[in-house]
Image 1 (cartoon, rainbow, N blue to C red):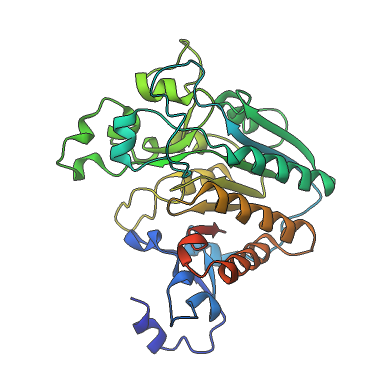
Image 2: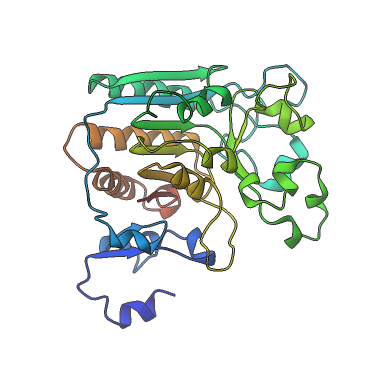
Length: 328
């Protein structure tokens, strides 16, 4: 896929702006190997855009650092009521399990490492004079997150969410029967309802199809709900969860899902994941990123690229670092 472009005149090109279409949005171009020791990220700087129309504006403008407030969510309590098979043990990948397994187990497992991640990031931000609102356990709930974009106050400069992310493909494309499940998050014909984040108490609604208390939020923040928020004052959103970068492919209209939702909401930079990344490696990635960004005058993209380079030097396999992508 890349070789014809290389042959067409990529030699000497330092920066490449691109907006992927169809299946290409599932690939981190920088992680494509050139040889046993080199990947494309060593040769080119890739800039992922939601749409190439962004090239008409000054995409290199540095967001102001004057607003120094952040909201951090982690150590989310997915079960507000105890039940057997609640998923307290099992895989500790940020997306939990593959879609078929999630359908069968019916719940989302806890993510122990997100507590350490959230606390360390909060401490780093506070050391850099940020006002931090750290939300864990039951406080990391949907009602609070929605209030960030619908209150009289501006949305936070940084929004970091460490939890499970989900994406289910078009149910009409599957003939194995799993798409007949009652859950709207699995079987909806609306792509932005089949992509989202799991927040406090989300397991109950995931298992039962409705919130624990009538009239309350269900703990499942869908891409559609995010798109209705106002995050125009938010410079950086970090989705420390798996599969948050995925979404449906509708012709050449790009990707529906969380990435489009946060962009519609107005977020400046968005960091997502393309596949399942372990709790431990995710925590290490973000610890390095914030250190690079807060202790220097780097832009978000420069700090992100430096972090990927450091992870690449430590872990040769692209699986452990190329799953993180930055959308500008």
